[in-house]
Image (cartoon, rainbow, N blue to C red; front, side, top):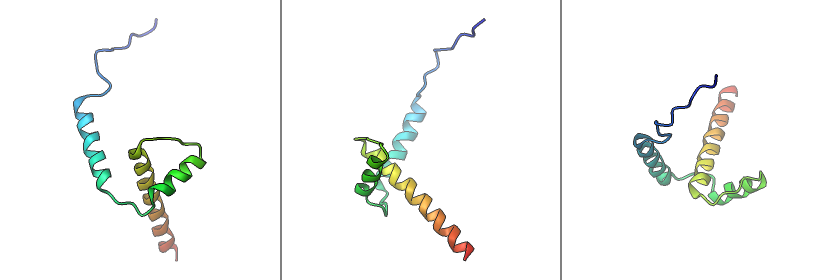
Length: 78
C-alpha cells in the first residue's frame, strides 16, 4: 500500500521567511572582493543564467569564502 502524504504542513512557514529576510538583508550589506560583474561573467560561462542579483551576490560571497579558505591552507603548508 502507498502511504499518504500529509499536505497540511506548509513547506515555508513564517519563521523560515523571517530568517531568509534577515539573511538577504545581511547579504546586501556585505561587500565582496570579487566584483559582481566578474561573477556574472563566469556564471554565464558555466551556463548559469539568472536575473536575481541576490543569487549573484551569494555566488560572489561563496567564491570569496572558498578562495580565502584555500589561501589559508596554502599559508599553513608553507
